[in-house]
Image (cartoon, one colour):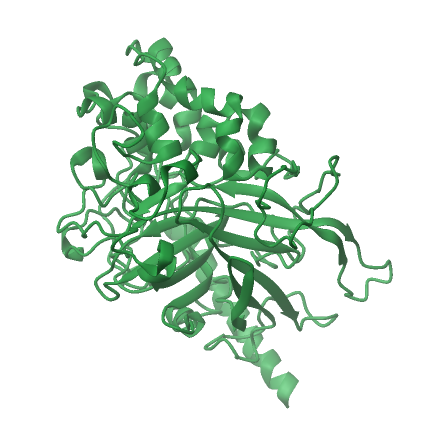
Amino acid sequence: MVSNTYGAAGRADGVGYLTPTAATRSPNPFRKPHGRDCPDACPTHPAYRSARRRQRTAPRSRAARPWTVSPDKPDSVTLIASFAPFSAPDGGPNFFPFATDAAYNIYVDNDGDAKADLTYRFTFKTQDRRGKDTFLYNNGPVTSLDDENLLFRQTYTLELKRGWETRTLIKDAPVAPSRVGKASMPDYNTLRQQAIKALPGGGQVFAGQADDSFFLDLHVFDLLYGGDLSETGTDTLAGFNVNSLAIQVPAADLALKGDATRNPVIGVWSTTDRGRVRLAAGDDLQGERGEDRGGRVQVSRLGNPLVNEVVVPAGLKDSFNASWPERDAKTPELVKRVTEPEVPKLIEAIYKIPAPATPRNDLVEIFLTGITTKAGGPIKADLNSQLNNADVPPKWFQPAEELRLNMSVKPAAKPNRLGVLAGDLQGFPNGRRLTDDVVDIELQALEGAAQTGKLVDALTAGDKVDANDQAFGNSFPYLALPNTSKVGGTAPAAKPASAQDTDTQSVALNTAEAGDAKTWRSIAYVTGAVGVAAVLALVAFISTAWWRRRSRYLVG
């Protein structure tokens, strides 16, 4: 999820600013000791975007999603961050690579000081073998990641920073490519499985394209569903893809002092950094790559879902995207947006449902401190604040916008899409599962349900998009395979086709859930019209025949 009407990071044109901070410990875990990333007045950085998407995509991110134990890995936590939303399956010829001038980061705060104790950093390289010979992503069917027909490939390096020590966990690991189509990649699940790599010390990692697992009706921006709740029931993101990063590691690796029993709560957020200055390639158009100068600048930051979109106002998005959590409590304008939220006022004006009284200290718990009785908030429960960790001195604690997770909460036998509000303590806002309906949950929370313990009857239907259009899975990375047909916003939610029918991996459970996948509610994958399908099939047949002839010509 990202700011600006579900798309841009920072401003709508992708520009971000870095606001340096004065702190005893540098908030940037990749800075040199006692160093600074930039002077007090930093230049703006353009996120290189193009209608043709050249060789990169703007690293527009969604919130990292931490989950607890899974059926196949009972002592693990999975962290996922997704990028490049609204990636259409037919978005060729370059499709959607990760940006090679960017660093994608997932941070973990296990002691509650709003600073990163662990940082997982991904950086990417591109191997483009097309040259002057072709514009095609692949020139024949691709059956493996090292298939010679795959002309555009990416690899990545994953680093882990803990304290002042940085080590490389994996280097030059393959990225699962964009799913061009069934003719080009007849068995995409094989490509995904080949892109899952083991990590030293336990765990695994994945980078590649996936179905967009976020489900919602974006008519919310039309005066809250048309002003009369008539514009609901359509999954706007059905059929679209994202680029996803997934890490699964032992819970003890993330816990303070390595003890997930005494210190089970962590906070997570993700950022994207891009080169502050980029020198373009020369005018000879020989395919030489540009060069980054002056280090990187943070251009995107996500923690809890929808905070960047609907809590942070437009005038604060640049500074929020460039800032670190340790500054949140010191930014009065941001705190006020939590204690005096905008959405309940809009609901009162449009639907005549009285807004809860302010200040909203219940939302402070949800978004800034975690739910705990140790901060004097109105929610009388100890769930997911680092203040609940046995080895965290209260004086260390700093309120900050993080997605918090209590790793000790046992999986629900029958997960409820409304999470904590429905008594399912393993659901959002205690971490976030793929199946958690965060739109409906946050709508109810903003109307005071977490404080009163009762749902607002007039809003119980929410946006009427209660599940993803594709089945999730019971093994890492849990995300559904990328779509090959674009159907976003064209049809209401309905009963889903099976994973086999839609040529997706049967990914039904994520790491936060241990219930029977058969008990999950899901919705249909809607295919295109027959006429369009016939035309596409004809084009695919002609293209495949041409590729085969061309391949024989190239090798013969």
